[in-house]
Image (cartoon, rainbow, N blue to C red; front, side, top):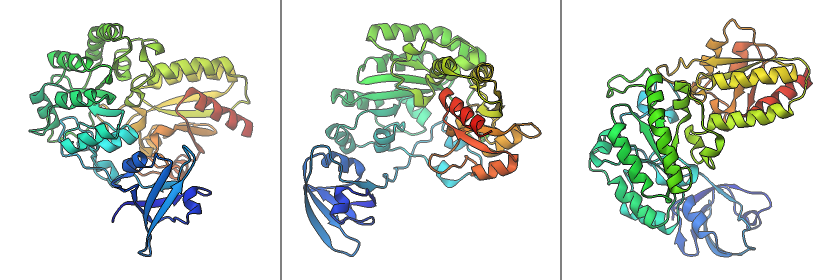
Length: 434
């Protein structure tokens, strides 16, 4: 009688009225034993519920609940413990981490439940027939799936694992069940580009609309690839050649399928200094968490903020960013400075923690910021984008806290939403305080 541990009871909820307490366990709903929070969400949708509760004192309660449609029970559970990944992908970022980081960063998850709940990408290499049946029965849609290559032998080489299920068989089964899938390819020059990429894109486009989108993102390489297979970075020349070939193909697919389907990561455009397509070509931004469409969205939002910006009290602020988006942020800050009278200085922080080809903002450590600002006059405050910090904990990848950073810099640090509006709002607040 295991069930799900209740970690919180929402005040004023049905659960509180029933004297259910944190630490109790919800074992079953309407005769269905619960394995995880997905089972709970699936079976708790009826208006009449029979709950089996295992109390901390050893008692077992059976409680009948009749509620209005959509009224929540008020129970909060811990997220599922993720299944570990048994792959040894040639491009795996975890295998390229330096020593000494906090232990959760070295955990590789490969869990279709987290794909459904949080949008984590999974390869489906460990999914059983029983689990596929559950996905179809409980409508776990959409799923986010790392394909990389549809050629079975190449995929096994890239995932570093033999005798894995054939990905196209799995995708066809899910498509037949009308499960929506968003897919990705981590592009490794010399591995899964060229003819292999042509095949992969064609195969996945053939499953549209259930394969709803496909993102191609360049491989990320740190300075810690010792003992791992050779991988080449996507260079400026490679990115330019890649876009020259694949932008027209993406447009052709969009016209043929009736909506945007193939999305090329922002990094290709940044590296090659190629103009971005208009924002409307990114559809409803299904791959934005994958670094696709972030800069076009930022540029569009920047125009809106600059149209609304008004003069403010003079204030000098340093704004931190990674190397990749520096050009676009600096152009926005220059224009915002002119509109508001503020003195806004962007600083592109180099990733010393990871080294190699890591240039994105979300992988900047606190110690990297300290090094980048050493000897600089940073003004009244330093703005740090929220994507650099672990959500809910306020710590950087190297475990440096905001308080640690403020002490090291001798300047107040403000965490801001990573948008033009977030920066402008912080500017106004700081100017008002001054």
